[in-house]
Length: 149
Ligand code: ZN
Image (cartoon, rainbow, N blue to C red; front, top):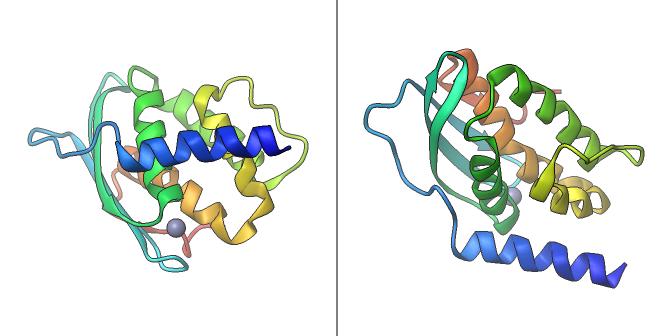
């Protein structure tokens, strides 16, 4: 398991140090601000959604390494995907970080967050960007991990 932990930490620390898609989009079509009060993580997302496909996404935020890395890897992974597929991926991601019988085959690099399962207090750090993304797609401007189940 130590090999797995090393990979997990390496990828997360790299994305925390050099976040991808960090910034804002002036002519965004969708926007949401997310907050995880348990840890103090905040993330804001700007998206360009056309024909139900996420054409571009950028994030700004402040928070722990897990929340920043999750935003970075998520934004990298979902560009070009349909919103219906993204909802489905969130279900798979949520299973990955909360259950033992998950199937991560569709999650690519996002599967590094499987290690979060061992730290239940950090699950909302890893899912904050997702909750914020779904809120933005739904046209909600604000979301808190404490509003979701
Ligand atoms: Zn956090």
